[in-house]
Length: 71
Image: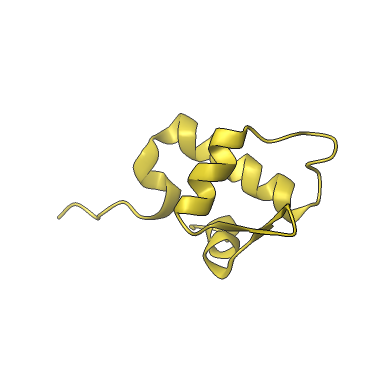
C-alpha cells in the first residue's frame, strides 16, 4: 500500500527542502538577514503554514508541525 504524501512532502524534494528552510527562517526570526522569496511566502500562507501579522510572517500550528521530525 502506498502512503499518501502529506504536508510539503507532496511538492517534490527540492521544493519541500526550500520551503522548510523558509519555515525555519521565519521560526528563527532570520528574515532580516535572509529574505524569503515572496512567492514562497504566498504559497506557505495559502497552504496554511504561515500567517502575516502586522506585515510580519509567523508560523501557524500547521507550520510548526511541519518542522517536527517526520513532519
